[in-house]
Amino acid sequence: MVTYTGVEPEPAPGERPDEWVMLAYRIPREPSTPRIAVWRKLRKYGVFQLADGVVVLPASARTREQFDWVAEEVVEAGGQAEVWTAAPTTKAQQDRMRAKLSADRGTEYDELTDAADAARSAPDRAAREKKLAQLRRRLREIDKRTFFPTPQRDDAEAALRELAADRPGADAQVQR
Image 1 (cartoon, rainbow, N blue to C red):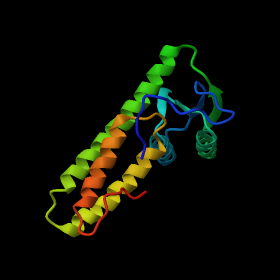
Image 2: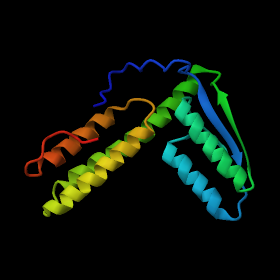
Image 3: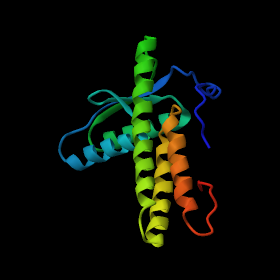
Image 4: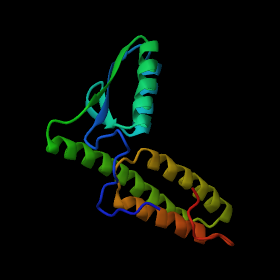
């Protein structure tokens, strides 16, 4: 269970908390399939978009690797891509990016909470169990792109516990 305490976790060895990995890319408009695939993948990663063709994520081995893979896809599609490590020049820039990423994830957790609450009223037990499994997968997906704690995550987890508790013989734990 992730509980928001207002204290940020210590960075991993070799990582600075103000360091970001940046992907600058340009991909041909046609055919549109590779361009759309790249944008969907970047959205899945939960990027912060600085400008057209420039996105950032907090620096980690995982985010660097993700951007390296996307850069390869862009180049294979006939485009150009560079992966850089960068740091904002002001605390205000850092705070703005962190706040936007947190707000985006908070919105996703709120949507998950609403979906779990709605599923509790479904009359069909099988439909509730199917929805619970879907929502658990969704929680794991959101968690993968949550770089900064959000209080909405705890609400989402509680809503899933309540949905699970409505099942006969279910324990109140959210399975991960």
